Image 1: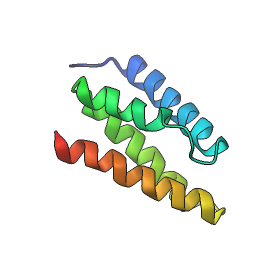
Image 2: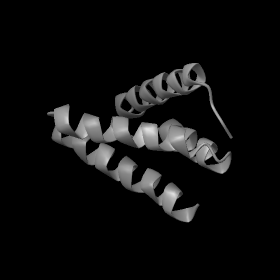
Image 3: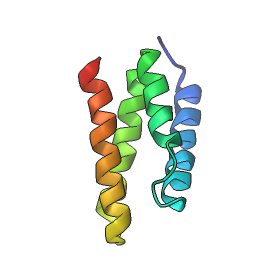
Length: 85
């Protein structure tokens, strides 16, 4: 499925907001996982890879060890979605 650049940017921002919600709840929310899974199931792999790129950037700038660990776990789960496709 082809996405316009505008739609892809909107989805990238949505992924970032869901990540912030995920970490704000100390990782007890599955909305970031669900976001990635939904787009993988729709075949919108560029959305999933954009989200992974964002998560990898977070790892390089985050200083809180707990958030780094949560983000690393999230990255593994999201990468698993791409492996399953």
